[in-house]
Amino acid sequence: MTAVERLAFATAAASLASSNPEHVKYLSITVRKECVLPHIRTDENKLYNYMIGLSLLPEMAQYQRVVFIPDPRSIKVQSGNSLHDYLQTKLWFDHGCPCALTTQACDSAQSTNVQFADMLSGVVQSHYEDGNSAPWLALRRHIAIKTLFF
Image (cartoon, rainbow, N blue to C red):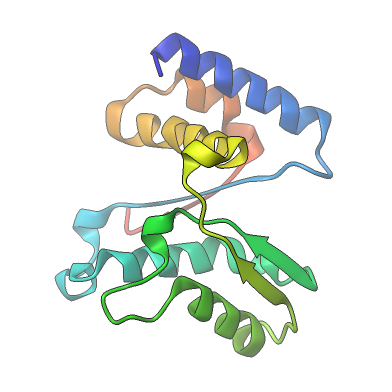
């Protein structure tokens, strides 16, 4: 996506959130990986799973049933424990929530919703990694942001 396209997307996404505040919520979690201890970085998916948990578990805990559609690369960590099992266990034990979690991995090529999430991620990534902050500034007030190890 070009810088102009990314800004147009961010502007449209901000408008969507403004028009539908009860139905549209954007969450972002960003980690400065070089500040993460080396023993934690040996399996990057564990850090990814932890970040997903910090970001999404409070939201998921509000519902009796959640369909979670993650990036397919996140399903397993080197240990063989799945993200789904991690999240389900955290919902039940840490949040005391009987939420029934269904996980459906979906490649972004198969889902416009996942493509939308990928484009939101691109806005955040471009801000933090490339210094292209115009799209970020257009969308920033609509994103619940968490940063780790900054």
